[in-house]
Image (cartoon, rainbow, N blue to C red; front, top):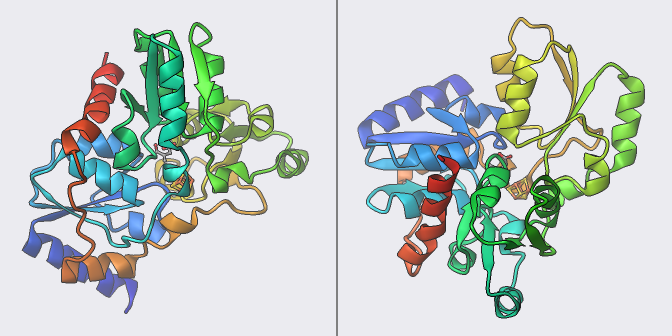
Length: 306
Ligand code: CIZ
Ligand code: SF4
């Protein structure tokens, strides 16, 4: 089916089914273009609480749809591609959390929002990459177990030196694969370019960066910058929003030669979105013990708003 026809059908189905479409910056540009709202998981989580549509379609990976469902249990939450999962969202064991809890009385378990509802139930508070520094610094506890992302955890530890941050071994396969050598090659080719990196990148890649931030922070930094060239070290999906915001500014962005793509986000195509709206498939069920899993999400929203 032609893209224009897909767009027409989706608009019709959204009205018919009282549905709103949310998309993450990492899904394909064609899917972002069909969404009512595009953003990072913090924005999408906050937004989800304010929406009135009967159905929320979440174009992203399963932890995002699960968070929307937890924050909004009364609504139908659909995922165009239920198999889209984030491998990092599973990269921590209960026994590791229990061991650290036994060792420290004054401990907060901080779970990156990129986790399953089960893992959120072990945590005191969630964070996203755009609010992790703020939320961790607001916590009353001195000791912080940061799960699952070791790269983001290490970066937060550096930015909040007053806390004792204990790290886990999880990582994002897509960001963790970016190598300093590819960044150096890009810098040699484009010596005027500013280097922007996502904190899920390995430490030696972050050393190369002029600016470190979440997707939204990277996008906004580029839109506001006087520079013309940018080397962007995160998933290529962010290019769509950067292009939307910088139209006519003559800015060029470069990605590593390996073009970081999140294979799970990539599965959420326009065709899948159409099929999901047509058939009402990919319904996210409320996970077990939803109040316990929702508590750290609500705590994040509260601390990030301070
Ligand atoms: O928090 C998010 O949405 C993710 C997965 C990345 C980012 O930096 O926005
Ligand atoms: Fe997970 Fe990495 Fe994909 Fe983000 S980019 S959803 S952290 S695998």
